[in-house]
Length: 101
Image 1: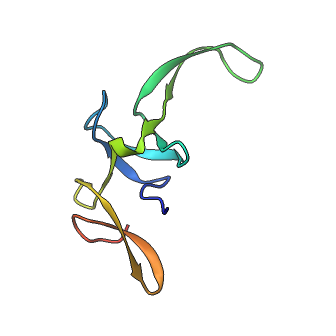
Image 2: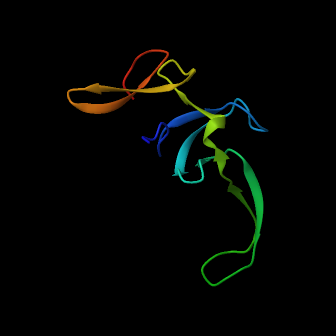
């Protein structure tokens, strides 16, 4: 199945403690159906100090379900994603505006 949300997409959170917040997808795990969004679903991780990194309480973005995310269209509103063929290539488009993503 083609990915409706990809790395680098601007998204808005539809449900959960960060509902309404916007961010950019930094990584996607399609097998688990989750994505990591910068600044969203942040948890404190206690890490031990090592030679390469400073230890302490480090905030880290945790994965969020793809079903709780919606793509932002050119107007800054949440939209669903559709697929169509243009010039023999499969492209994603925003259902609200019809613009190619």
